[in-house]
Image 1 (cartoon, rainbow, N blue to C red):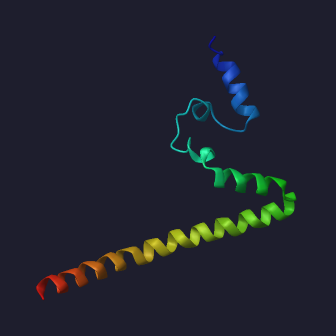
Image 2: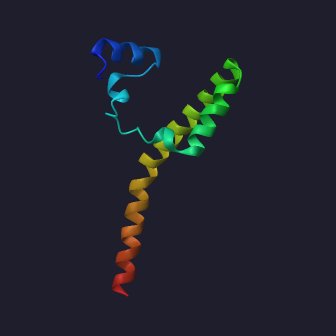
Length: 91
């Protein structure tokens, strides 16, 4: 039996997700299969809401910093690596 689109929409709404996610139309479908990630999600869920808000803020900040560092240093690192490789090839 196939559920109606309305039933799928209601289920997605109850689970605070999308119908596409329920149908597996996402790149993140394996995320919740990782035992370490599940453990962390469960631990976060058990923490007081205010403390969880602070932790998530800190995590968001760290992720933004990592992204910024990669944008800044990755081109330099690649350039330095290429330059070093060329020097070694010449010798």
